[in-house]
Image (cartoon, rainbow, N blue to C red):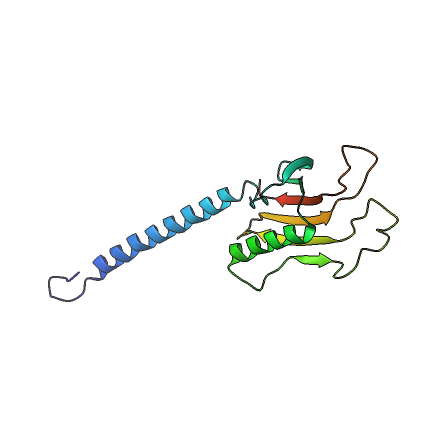
Length: 165
């Protein structure tokens, strides 16, 4: 880096700085493109063991709703997903939220289409100019005259997922 007179060579230092700058810009571009590509699929959250697939609704190019049934209680299922939430964010203070906080939802005793209560857990992997999340909803199943929709005695787990195109 020294010139002929023993001093620092501005030209050599400039060339080295330019090469380092180009390498840093290239690394940033690769990182950004890799991050964007990873957001083009649904955010997978491990399903509670023993749950079974029940169906999919509103399947779109960048979103979907997937339903599962579990024989575990809604509280046990919510506890499982709360632990997954805490593991993902490495924060023991995070928790799934119950709606309503206590008791049952208004009119749920007379309308079988209203869940008694719902636990919501939000798993978010959104980044710069991108979104990718899975909202997990957990609620007790309700009886239904249609055997395909009868979930009495089960816990329903709904994955509402959105990702980039």
